[in-house]
Every structure is written in C-alpha cells, then in structure tokens.
Amino acid sequence: MADRLKGHPWKVTSVGDEIDSNCPRCKEETIHRVVAMVEGKVHKVICTRCNSQHRYRPSLAAMRKKVVLPTERQARVLQKIASARDSRTLKPLKEWQDLKERVGEVKPLHYDPSASYSENQAVSHPNFGLGFVRQLIDSSKMEVVFEHEVKILVMNRAKSE
Image (cartoon, rainbow, N blue to C red; front, side, top):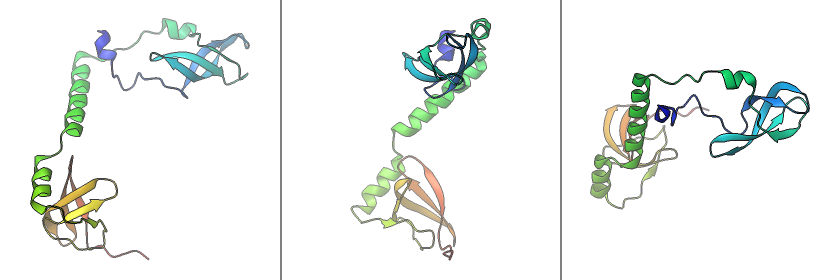
C-alpha cells in the first residue's frame, strides 16, 4: 500500500511550501514555510508570524488527519502515465534517425514562421531542437519530426509589425 504513494503528484511537499506547524515561540499552531527537507520529509520550518526557525512539529490536526491513498485504479493510471513519459523521453523516434541519415550533414535552417519549407528539409527549432519536415499539410502548415515527438508548425505566416 505504501508503494501507491510513491510518485504521488498531489502529495509532494517541497522547500518553500507553506505548512501548518506548532510554533514554540507563538505557543500555537501557525502557518510555516518549509526551509529544509531530509529524506523527503519536512525537517526545518520558519514561522510566518514571528519568523522563528525551528524543527518541524506537526500540528495535532495533521497527526489525526487520515491520509487519502489513491484507489487501485488511480494507482494503475498514474503508473501508466509515468511509464509512458519515461519511454517517450528515453528513445528517439526511428523515423527521425532515418531522416537524419538520409539528409546527412546539411546545415539546418533556423525555424521562422514566415519562411517557406519543403519536404525532408532540416529545421533547427529553438525549443524542440533538430527536426525534419515530414510533409506539407497545406500552404501554411507543415508536419515536422523531432527527436522525441512530431509537431505541426506554421509557415508562410506574415510577419507582424
């Protein structure tokens, strides 16, 4: 059952987050900001009311609160999403590799939405990297194969002044 919490996206606390804690100076439960974490657990906090820094002391409500675990179905879905994300980022597309070998060491053009492109042309995009034009969809759109994904980009767009 503890495995289901691992990688649980809505149960992660990190440095800078706000959390309830018992403050020894204020002598009551107040909002604190997380300063340090050890082994994934909150270690030190700063009180937002009196600015005292101390070890994390969980509030009574937090100690009594029941942790809601994801259902078995939600855990399976989260696991599928994580595995799909991992497999997508690890291997480059085979089509991209084939196009790279076919085009060779031709210097790619920098992507410009106002420029015109042709099929199998190498394009250097500032965010997606090196890509190759797979096909021209119409006079203003093209399908480009990048190393990890295929994107539809615009072309022949008038420059805004």
